[in-house]
Length: 267
Image (tube, rainbow, N blue to C red):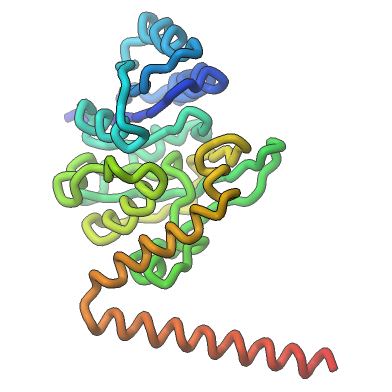
């Protein structure tokens, strides 16, 4: 039985990157892939480029129509995907060579539903490598403690999952335009078998002018993520909330002790 991977790209007026995004999936040379491009009614020439590629490559499926935002576009992609495995590739991000075949081979051996997570390179506005995200400790407790650098995948170009996961957790929150991926990860780690592999699959461009960049700049992202974390903490049973409070308190005590020792050494 053939396992198909569906890569979903939501886009709106993405002419700067749409061609390189499409070519990146083509150059993966993954035979069992479909690329679903959900355009929100672009007016900058994006649609013409998508149409041109779709006429030449049978694995590309696309639609262009007004939507309610990125989450709505993502849900359209999920609902139309024929693949058993899903991945999301934002128009300005890209995969490492061979990432799709490697991830597809690995996830075939995992129980359903699974979330398969790799590493992601994060590039700054000048095209320089800012850091590499390695969420090796991904899991609910780390996320609830706010250990995002240890546990949160920075970008969907570095993770893949069974489509059936949505049967358990529902679709992306269509009224959430910024934190939909945070909600998804919190839900996924509770409903799926999570597997981390120390392989770099994704590349995330943290670019000036993009939604995420401007959200960070206006100090919207940090408080929002904390609020989402608080929401999922409240859902946990009493013993878990007590554990989290103790660990959090102990961490603060240890930080105070470390600072006090540093002060003594510097005198």
